[in-house]
Image (cartoon, rainbow, N blue to C red; front, top):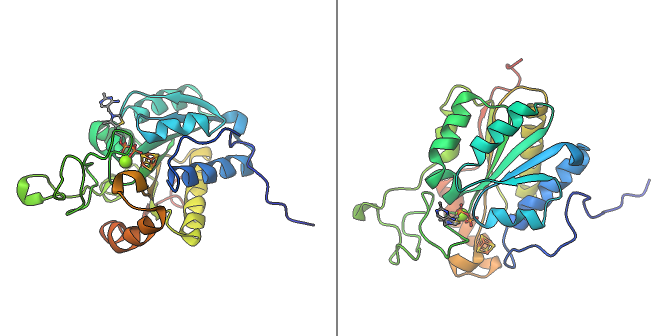
Amino acid sequence: MEKVYERSQTLKKNPTGYCPGCFHGVAMKIICEIIDEMKMQDNTTTVLPIGCSSMGCFTIDTDMVIALHGRAPAVATGIKRCSPERLVYAYQGDGDLAAIGFSEIMYAANRGENFTVIFVNNSIYGMTGGQMAPTTLVGQKATTSQKGRNPENKEGYPMHMSELISQLKAPVYVERCALNSPQNILKAKKAIKKGFEIQLSGKGFSFIELLSNCPTNWGMSPEETLKWMEENTMKEFPIGVYKDISEEVK
Ligand SMILES: Cc1ncc(C[n+]2csc(CCOP(=O)(O)OP(=O)(O)O)c2C)c(N)n1
Ligand code: SF4
Ligand SMILES: [Mg+2]
């Protein structure tokens, strides 16, 4: 049999709203491929947040809700509890999830809600023009920290969401992946699919962090972001499985 590389059915035919070289488009493409492979297009609800993620409404062709800033886990909780047979996932940026929505994500994870969160960490507020996020690296420049994030200036340190969530008892599966190379994109695809499968077998909360880029607000070409991610982001945020109790949970 001949293998054909086709456009995913769940991927809308519109141009995306993303800047050239932005990995939001890559993340959404692999999510759409997984939904196709699992034959779940008609039974999936995507919960988008505020941020560049919200432009997923031009890209992902499933049922969809755009939640208020940070509130995607609360909205996903309601949808999943009312429709337990649906595949429900929240797709959130780092400003959305780790700043304004910190409480929502921690409590949804701690309750062990049976849905999946895909956390796109580009270490900056992309949509609003490059302000410092909780995940901004020490020394990384942002419009609100023009000399670079400085903990000595009471700007704090990067927050590690996968590590924090994996300390809780209820979450079943927590993995951090990166979108900076074809190998890592394939690993990310495997991780998201595993999270979705855990959810569909009723086992509980899964959280997949995707290290991403923002060429526009990092002030780099897409190629330069690849090197920068490898030398900086991935050193601060090591990729790997932080928790997996999916074999033990009934
Ligand atoms: C209640 C509220 N506060 C602030 C904003 C402004 N705002 C829109 S997007 C955003 C940050 C998004 O950053 P992130 O979640 O990292 O997403 P990215 O765009 O980087 O993917 C902010 C602060 C808003 N829309 N609503
Ligand atoms: S502003 Fe950044 S995160 Fe948003 S679409 Fe452009 S490159 Fe992507
Ligand atoms: Mg961001």
